[in-house]
Image (tube, rainbow over all chains, first blue to last red; front, side):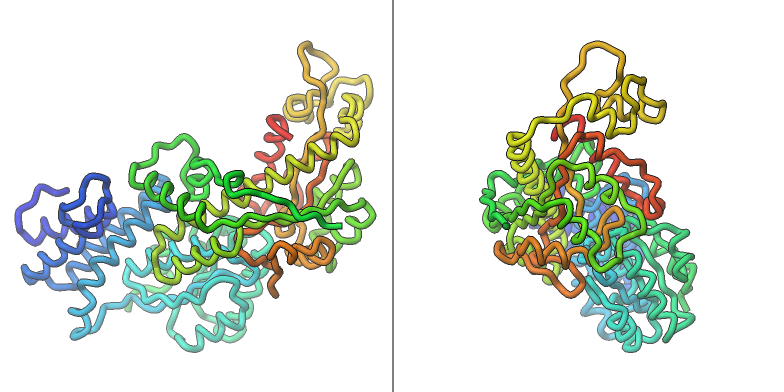
Length: 231
Length: 278
């Protein structure tokens, strides 16, 4: 924890730090032995009390913390549980901020439609991508697992400005990923479609006509920033 | 004729290392106390909810040949194409850790309790793999009790090593070690048969192969059903074929058309594991 004053920058640093360690609130005993100490929820309350703008709390506190975890995940310094715990802590802060954003519109990076392709029921990778992108400000439309191309196309029609993410874990469902991209391209030739998952490679992504390949959930954030820059 | 197998929860509770592997944590890596605690809690939920079951059916090579062709959607050449004709015993199998575990995982994800749901998911995945190992070992013991293991000469022949000759170089680094088929050297074990499981959805066996497998095996008797996309319910179920024979038959290089797209290359670990166990 940052040696703290009650200066807003220290509070924001503590929020980011608590996101990284997964300390959602004072009741939570994560990290072990930290029960009773302030977590994300309490630090966000303090930031709000100090009139720190919610956008700043989100960007420089919550998102900053989750981005560090995303980078550590990409570098194999932390693994799935740490990312999930961090995302949970971030959501504790988001829940505090949401009522404040209601009046001035929750900032959004864009809409992201995400699904695991047909024939594949694996959803952990998909969920990780959803959580990190949500942390990066994207509005997530999770269309679930075993998604037929028609389901993806229908979701895109509902959210025409969205970017799309497709996940596959099985070598054999990579074929379904190709079919999904083709189906999307038929109706939305210029749609940003990014792909990822254990068997997927950059080369395969190009082969099936995807806009880009994200080797890990954190890379999806940078990839989308490149392919679909913020307005 | 399918045989319903009794599998207990205690038998399939996985090692924590296996669970952490499913969480992407490399073996031997130090795990934080809070992650250990999450794993312990998920194991407890699993113990309460698991209802493991399995079904096994021996199958002739002729019947398996038809079944394996499925709807004709397999890759042109696959390892199983090469392996099963040289097998001594084949059996189809399906195992599950039960509906309740899958339901609790799904509920966790739905309610956005990703941390616990994901850990339970990993426990269940590791447990399903453990169930496969248990049934596989039972089948191996039963089958080898009926017929003797292959001789060293058979191993050499099946590995493509001419009788009386030293193994060719490409085998010397793996076959010799794995199968103990070198013609020189001293202290050697007797060759034994090995078993590996192969499943639709992997190594060129198209997932649609599940349909024929289910027609023959009838896993519905233990509560496993097949969905439209050929995926099983409960989710934490595994099906496939056990192939028993001299360990040499399971050796293959990862140079098939689909191997280039595979990033896990689990087949290498599986082949190496033959040396340690069945």
